[in-house]
Length: 149
Ligand code: DQA
Image (tube, protein in one colour):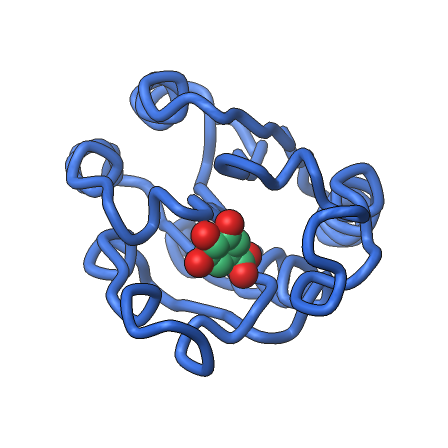
């Protein structure tokens, strides 16, 4: 049984640091990777941190997680609000899922208020920036302890 958490980031998150800093701040994707992997290590877990702009690639990663990951932390970015394919993959995966967003999607445009990821998630964290990823790792570590016992 693997103890790796798959951390999936969707489209345009590769642009963090320069993308709409008034919304997303100046934290880069590499910064997020560093805080996420460091927090996972504190829990004795590995974090497999990835980003793709391609919906099909995200779906394939989620499918692969059925055999290669203990749980999934996902910021599906814009696909959060559009992708039934990602929801189906998460529901087929059977692993614990935590949804995370840097911004508070409920303070923003109404089209961001609906998430296709949430029905597959145990919990949702949004609006806390990079800290949300750290909290998601804490929550996942706790969930995995409960899965084992
Ligand atoms: C986001 C929020 C989404 O609405 C948006 O499309 C993103 C980023 C966030 O982390 O705040 O790309 O998921």
